[in-house]
Every structure is written in C-alpha cells, then in structure tokens.
Image (cartoon, one colour):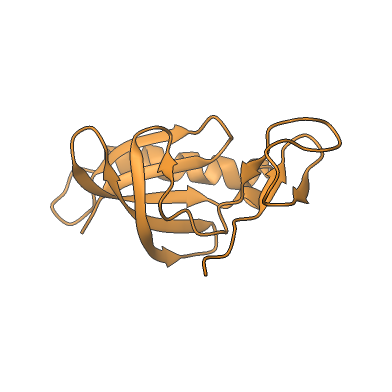
Length: 128
C-alpha cells in the first residue's frame, strides 16, 4: 500500500497531516514535501512524474513526461527544507543558469526551470 505524502504549511512552517488540504492553524494551502515520492503527480501543470531516478544532497531527480509534447525528461526538485535557505536556493538557481548555458554533446541539455504554485523549485533536463 502506497504511503501518503507528508504535507507542509508554508505559513506555520510545520509538517501537517497528509489528509488535510489547508493548515488548521493559519488556513494556508498545504504543500507536498518533495522528500516524499512525487510519482503520479503532475508538476507545474506540465510534467507527469513517472518515477524516481535518484536522490542527492539538494533534492531528488525524477523521470517525467512533458504532457503536451510527449517528451521524456529528467526533473530535479529542490528539497522543501532547503527552499527556505537563501544559500541553497541561490546555488540551485546558479546551477540552472550555468547548466542552461552549456552547449556540448558531453553535457545534458536544460529544457526548463520553474517554481510551482506551491513553492517547489525544479530544473528540467534531457533524459539520458
């Protein structure tokens, strides 16, 4: 049986029950913690997460499908607990910008970068 994802309140900055949609304290919409499996979710209205590929110090990488153009991609998602740390966010943004400027057959191509409505930072790359 699949475990329900934990949820997090961006207002109270506390973990909340996975069955809730809004925080019982401040009434803000709860967000899914990226440390949990995002498989089956649609990220930012475009990327259907197909399954995990790996995990690292800053986040997780997933295999996903771009729903509109039917392209398999790799999506790196910054860990939720790091999204509130200025240094980690700047490092993730710097990685996105630097990777996007690379043009070599020996590096992955960056297709997209964004922030979801619930605050997940993500980087979309070619799937190798």
